[in-house]
Image (cartoon, rainbow, N blue to C red; front, top):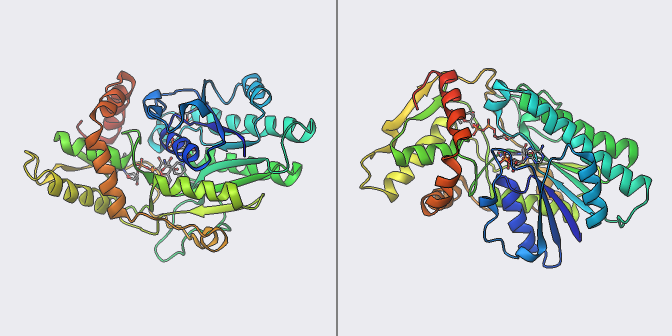
Amino acid sequence: MKNVLVTGGAGFIGSNFVRYLLRAEPDVRVINLDALTYAGSPENLKGLPDESRHIFVNGNIIDRALVEGIFRHHQIDTVVHFAAESHVDRSILGPEQFVQTNIVGTFTLLDVARQIWLNEGGFAPEGARFHHVSTDEVYGSLKPGEPAFSESTPYAPRSPYAASKASSDHLARAYATTYGLPVTITNCSNNYGPYQFPEKLIPLTILNAVRGKPLPIYGDGKQVRDWLYVEDHCEAIYRVLLNGKSGETYNVGGNNQPTNLEVVRQICRILDEVQPDSEFFPHDQLIQYVADRPGHDRRYDMNIEKIGSELGWEPRQSLETGLRLTIKWYLENPGWVEAISSRSDYQDWLEKNYAARGGQR
Ligand code: NAD
Ligand code: DAU
């Protein structure tokens, strides 16, 4: 691993991974390709461990000429592909961009890698690797009593987001099987931690609670998710890059399955403890039930035995310790919060989403 193309490296997990990799690999150069959509921001890349080994390219993964140019110019030997439209609610209100970025964009990256690494026998050494970052949502929704998702669980995506990610996973696997492209895939559960865009449940709850705004719970709040602290996800991807087998998929998760209501209450409890003088104490008084997400998946649960036994990875943070770190980060970074959440496109989205949920802002 010398010249690593990270796509979506100005987003939440991508920017955390860029930091992680620059720290973990002192000789690696990161070429960060990101279109800076609403979800990506240079704010997420301030104060990197070593700026001189980070090259930012503002561009779209669908732009084949640009991607080819980057592969050739920077002699890319490793791809870590995060770039995506990532928010389920947005995929319900506007699915087209999900098809473009998540499916066509992933195809473009895979096909350029095939052309340059395999057909032209370019500069990729033996160890070339295309790592595709995916989600547990491709497996669908678990009924009561059904076992956790394993790597062999059949795909059953239910939202436009999940369907677009499932499609990209199939393409990645097909390029491995058909052309022998050195592909690995990780399917991970819900991430949380520093730099997460505030549309997602955990940062939304933290930021609304400290401002005394309603904490929206979709439906009955008894949907179950598995939560993983973002740095643990970065470490899992890094281990797969180093020791994962080409052609293999690894499930990644946090070994916890709280309901959404429990997560929101847990955040409120920690805020009550760290801000006992808040005028919004107790913070769980702000909880507001709103209309459910259409097609809302009821339960996810991840079997992470494979990555544990083959690569020795397990999550370091529990949900409690990870939430404490996350709350601390959001409270200590008001400049980032202001820069990200004051954008008018985000405010417009909030209006639209809350209108769809029948809740108040
Ligand atoms: P994010 O929305 O925070 O960031 C996505 C990044 O991709 C942004 O910087 C955006 O500007 C960039 N991007 C979007 N479209 C692009 C395009 N066409 N060309 C170039 N760049 C583009 O997403 P995230 O939460 O960091 O998720 C990253 C990846 O991890 C995604 O593939 C997602 O499916 C996957 N994933 C996320 C989670 C989670 O809980 N957040 C869990 C499992 C898997
Ligand atoms: O499971 C992995 C996935 O996790 C990733 O692939 C996605 O990119 C990521 O966005 C995330 O998807 P979710 O839909 O699970 O995340 P979100 O934070 O939007 O919602 C988490 C749960 O909380 C979900 O059941 C919906 C619910 N929810 C969400 C919001 C924003 C609420 O009840 N209220 C809210 O305001």
